[in-house]
Amino acid sequence: MSSSQSTRADTARGPSNVYMWLALIVLLGVALRFYGLGDKVIWIDESLAWTMANLPLGTIWSREVALNGAHPPLYYTFQKFWLVFGDSEFAMRSLSALIGSASILAVFSLGKRIGGGATGLTAAFIFAIAPGQIWAAQEAKAYAFLILLTLLIARILISLFDAYDRQELDDRARVTQPSSNIRLWTAYVILAALLLYSHSSAVAFYVFVNAAASTFILSRLASAWGFLKSWILANLAVLFLCSYWILMVAQVASDRTGYSWLDSNLVFDFRALATTYLGASGLGISGWPQALFNVVPAIAGFIGLWAARTSRSVFLVAGTILIGGPVILWLLSFYMPIFLWRIVLWTTCGMFIVLMAHGVERLPGNGIRLIFLVVIGLSSMLGVALHHAHGDKRLAWNEASEYLQQHAEEGARVYFYPSSTKWSVHYYARDNASLNWNIAMLELPVDHYKLLSMDEEIPLAGLSNDASKHDQVWLVTVDDTPEVSDIQIELEKAGSLVGEKQWGHISVRNYQSQSSIRLNSDAPLSALAP
Image 1 (spheres, rainbow, N blue to C red):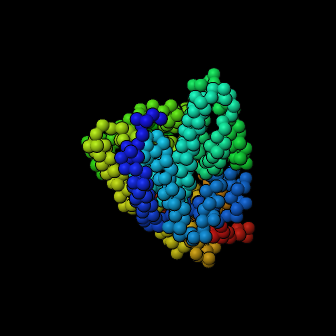
Image 2: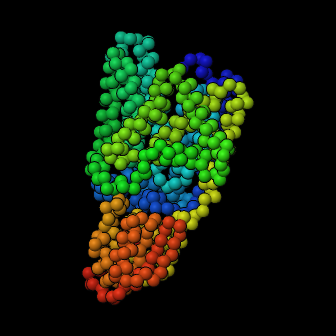
Image 3: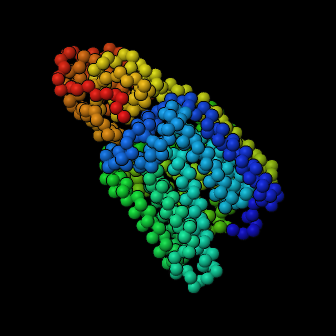
């Protein structure tokens, strides 16, 4: 990086001032991530994390978990040990909040490398108040951990490319030898292995990283054999460390039916989701203010990417992560529905925020820079306010669970669809040791999470026959999908709908069976077995 790219903050204020501002930004980010952390109700995916964390450690890392479509076990392992602080909504989410707060420092480091101290501070500020990052840090899910690892790996990758370029300039006779910077290669192997064990969508970012490295090697094909050898060895080490899980996941990935819920791949969907993630959507505004909130971050990001071209390493890494990698994944999705625009945002938004900051710092004049920062900041803070003001009725699993506990009789037949809805009811019934329901999961191909279920699995064709054996039948569902309609038709063959209560997407329905015949083989199953 040339001297003209040196940070204005470092030359005008001095390092101590930079870190003072960084400390204030981190405090702001921590406050935003912990504010209202326990206010919202635990939802399906978070209750699944709670269920996983309560399993024995050997079960979390078992083949059964992988084959039931669960994410890699590393985050659940961390969450298991984190249960020492309790399992309330606040306690469950505090791990992600801490990791998300630490990511502010990673963003500063990446921004400082790309554009200097001022860029690092601006990136840290935008990241600290970004609604999508706050949302990720307030979920008992692996998103915050995934984002932190992508930022660290991007920083390491740039350093690896720079180290090779310096080596090539300093001593061309050594370019055929593996890189001597063992610490960087070791850091890459460890971080990449952690990445692949963190979340299923981490595979996408791993593809992006290898696309960047492949482009780097091809651009120096005649002299890049040393780097190529080191890269192959490093990735063999990564795959060896992750082989335990990758072989099991490969079997899961071959089943296309489990991915029928994935979003479409339209560009419009990406624009809508990206603006929501950056806080520019859903603000109740229209016209030129909405256009301003959409356009300004995009302009700043593209200016930052264009400015990064002065550093080949930065431009290659940033360009591949933001453009090349997503295009590759999008093309693969036409073969198999493995693609989610959300995956792209989780794994690239940190880099885009850094480039936004780089673009803002490259704008001419303090006045223009201030205008851009005000627009980005206002959009973000409005998005944060909307995030906290969002009503809980849409995800009122606490109320649905309480309703079911009050009205479902002992021995009542309770069907859950999808099967993951059981864990949400389970979480809010965890202190009720007296429950004794006959629980059954519905055996449908679109139900991907039949996680280690010790409950009966009932095929749709045999549902009416099974329901007729019980006096009281309950159905707990989320979203009125065609599958839910088919389930209701089968249940109505065995009895009448006598009660229904809804909380947004959640429905609890009660059916009265036409027959009170019970079979001795119907052994009650506890709803509270972890």
